[in-house]
Amino acid sequence: MKKNSSFPALIFIVILAVGVAVAYTLKAASLDLLAVCVLACALLAAWFVSAGIQVADQWSRAVVLRLGKFRSLQGPGLFLIIPLIDTIPYWIDTRVLTSSFKAEKTLTKDTVPVDVDAVLFWKIIDPQKAALAVADYQSAIGWASQTALRDVIGKTMLSDMLEGRDKISDVLQKIIDVRTEPWGINVISVEVKDVLIPSSLEDAMSMQAQAERERQARVILGDSERQVAEKFGEAAKTYANNPVALHLRAMNMLYEGLKQNSTIVIVPSSAVETMQLGGLAGLTALTMGLGKEKIPQQTINEADSTPTDLSVPQP
Image 1 (cartoon, one colour):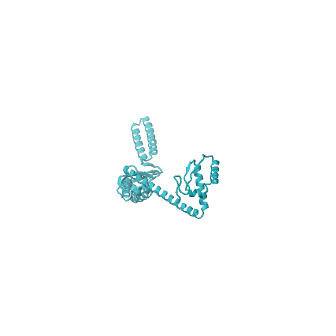
Image 2: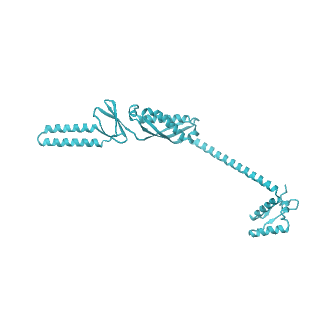
Image 3: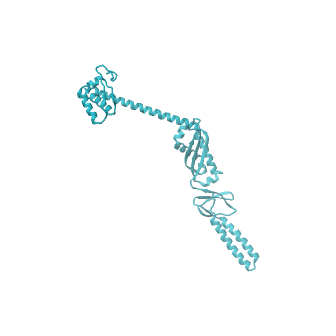
């Protein structure tokens, strides 16, 4: 983290400019030695004051050490230190930070190698611990995240990993937060971006999914046929108790078949006799009905009591 150096630089320039002006005045009065001393003192004072004035941004905290010992946290805003005695080894950013980490060729619980990419959202809540408890908190949190990810992958099945990314993210967040809490770091959330599996396994999973969809389609088709059969059974019971309804349904089916431009319709002779289509009145009625629909003339072949090639035996 870089400190804000604009204001200290301005102070340095102002003090040095005042010293140069005084030295120039003394030199004009033929006091050359005194002018050099004033210029040197102005330069030293400008450095000392500008080095002692520090400005921290709103999101920054300065860790101040005095003679190597922790003194205080300073910021945000303007604060003073003693040059050469006080030092600022760390400027801590207290905003929400992000870190990306990954686990390559890591075996799942069912021994499938996967590559997992994730993003960590974290924040420093105790700058003193982050500066003093760990040498490099950014590297430390990166390694802690990677090892936690590998550990979670090794305990998770591939199917659970592909379907339950939110659950894996929650587990990772808790594990990493426990590891980083002594460093003054709070893990806000972990997001698993991508899970990559071998291409050969992708093909196998695609075939498995396709087979599963075909199985479901056949099950649905079989269930549909069962429902249709049940409805046919209910209709058969209705027609068994009502011969007139059965005859009307048969005549309607024959009529609809002739409307589809059929030329020959094969029906049992007993059905023809029952529907009275063999007589002159039946043929006249059927012909008049077909004429209203404006379709070509249809031919009805019937047999006597013994079925011929154009009739179907009565079961």
